[in-house]
Amino acid sequence: MTLKIKICGLSTLEHIDMVIKSRADMAGFIFANPSPREINPSIAKELSFATAAKSLDRVAVFVDASNAFIEEAINSIDATFIQLHGNETVERCLEIKSLTGLPVIKSIGILDKRDIKVTQEYKNSVDYFLFDAKPDNNSTSQRGGLNKVFDWSILDDWSGPSYFLSGGLNINNVSEAIKRSDASVIDVSSGVEIKAGVKDRKKIEDFVQITRSAYGNKYE
Image (tube, rainbow, N blue to C red; front, side, top):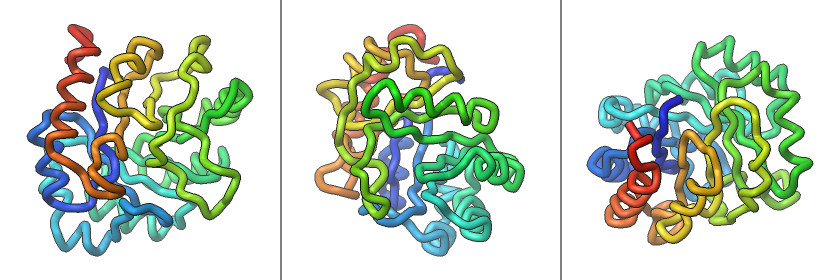
């Protein structure tokens, strides 16, 4: 995967417009609860999110969702990627990939080096990994958008496929994150908000500009 910038947690047409005008590459739509950024497939379809975001890669984000819900959600945004942020097993990832025919991104919560070992189980069943800060040990807690950074040095010895880097990124630390990691996609949500779930145009523009600058001539 070429270097990309993903803005996640979009829930309005205005948010989509912000991302397009910022010249980011990917838009994430969260079809999961609990999250202040959750959207309903029926609303996404009614507001024609697929058409509004057609110039972007559209990522449908799920947490342990059913097949029926996944199909409804990906159709509502004409998704180009699926992101799994729950406790999906290897078998479940393969099932979803077969069901949808879309590339699958598996989120892995990182606290220490032991968490990286989990990727070995999934390496033949998903297309990409997303490394994020590990959520609290509570099955009902929010899985992403926690505004929480993990120790990027844990990824120093990574030798697997391209990965997305997330977790507490903002204009103050994204340059260092790019320098310290080998991420193909920088993924931000809470770092471009004025409050949980409310994106800010200036924050998005600044984040994209700083990320592009940090990527340098490697960015296409």
